[in-house]
Each structure stands twice: as structure tokens, then as C-alpha cells.
Image 1 (spheres, helix red, strand yellow):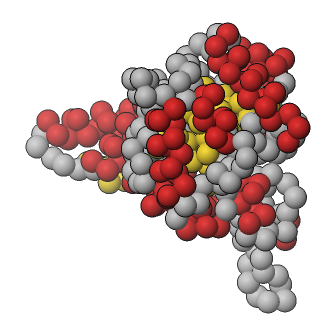
Image 2 (tube, one colour):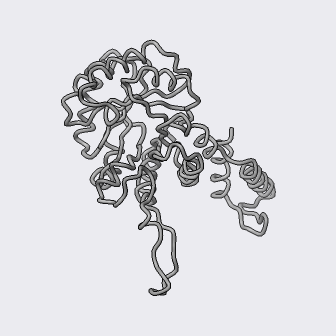
Image 3 (cartoon, helix red, strand yellow):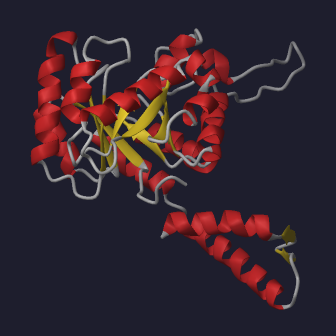
Length: 307
């Protein structure tokens, strides 16, 4: 795991909206990214960058991980953003949108280093995987530079890049959710547009010791959908999930916290194996199921999440 710092609720906020940025800094989110890309119109890009720099210098961010989503590698704004951000001590990382090519990422990393040669540790890079090409290259992207810290799934742009018939962020379109009928003889089965890209990104993150962050649920007024979407990411093993509104923070934090029942069962598994080990055994039966060291490793992960 790349970091033990919690990143369960990763709040996005437009960098040019100072009032919202201040609220984000004071929120219960574990991490915040100030957005210079999709949430900012072209006419406001320079202003948004200045606001982000000011916020990093003046606001109390507590223990949050603080990042800025810069513009895409082919943007006319990215060079100015790198120069302005690279040396700021409170900046933990920049999020690189539409990460697709390893040479681009390595180039951004070297530009960040060159812009702040005296900084003790270079600003980390979080890669936003949000196109088909980015997902195809996710293994190589994850390994292409030592400054890469996290992979994020960009659910909206990813759905667009593969031609999905949906205009909702982070939700499978209606026609994708079920297949089969009485006429065909196949049972109806739930499907999920994002199950494959989520697992693909998660495996790459784990293989290279990176943080894995799921994309947001666009239905920010729907606490139930927000929480169930976060529960899916948490159950898969993601470290956190982007949220696009403060109302989504609490449901997301709740989803990533193991229940009392999960924690109790995890502790029972560890205790049972410790007793078995004391008797020279490498496996034990608990509640009619065989428990071995793989179960213990999974159980300890749950205990760690609950601590």
C-alpha cells in the first residue's frame, strides 16, 4: 500500500470558487483536489490557478491530502500550472487527467522536478485513467515513474470513450443492467459497466504499490446511491472514492468503514489462527469453514481499515 493516510472520501472542488475551496478545506473529507480542468471554463483558467496557489498557501488543510488536477498534457495551460505549483510545500500531488502515454507522464514528472529543484521530495503524480487507451496502458503507466502515487478512475470520460449509452456519471445505463428474458430462456442478471475498468485499475494499483481511487457518483443528492456506489468500491478493495459534493462525504466515509460485525468476525479469524498456530497447525475450522493464512491476511486488512 502506497500510503497509510486515509483517502476514503476524495472531494473535488472547482479551484476558481474560493468559497467552496475554503469549505472543502474545513470539511470531513480525507483528501481534496482543486480542479483546474473540467470544472473551470477556459476564460477562468489563469484565475483558477492563482486561486489554487493562494489556497495552498493560506488555508488550514489539517491532515488532508491536498492535490490539484491540472489540465491535460496537450493543454496550453499545463506549463504555467507546473511552474506555479511545483514548489508549493503544502501540495501533496497533482492529478494528471486523461493519462494515456508513458512518455507524457514521465515528461510531466521531469518538468515538475525541474521547476522545483530544491524541493526535498517532488510533488507526487496521481494518474486519472479515463479513456480506453489509458486503461489498456494502465500497467505501464503505473510503473513508468517513481513519483506516481495513485490511480483514479475517471468514470464519466471513460464511459464516453467506449461509447456507452449513458449521460449519468458513475452509473450503468438502464439497458446495460439486465440481460435475458423469458423469450430467450436466459435469466436476468445484473451487470455493471464499471466492474471491469474498476478491477483492471485496482489490480494495476496493487501490483505497483499505488493508491486506488474510484470515480464519483454523479447523483450527489441521492445519499442511498452515493453510499451503495461507495460500498461497491470499498468491497472491491479501493482505498477511496471521489466525491463531487460535500453531501457525499459522510455516506462515503460510512461505506468505507468496516461494520462492527465485520470487525468482530475478522478478529475471531485472527484469534482462531493464533490458537491453531500455538498448537502447530497452519489451518483451522471456524463456523464450518476452513481458515488459513490467506484468511488471516484478509482479516487483518479489515481490522486495519477499522482502526
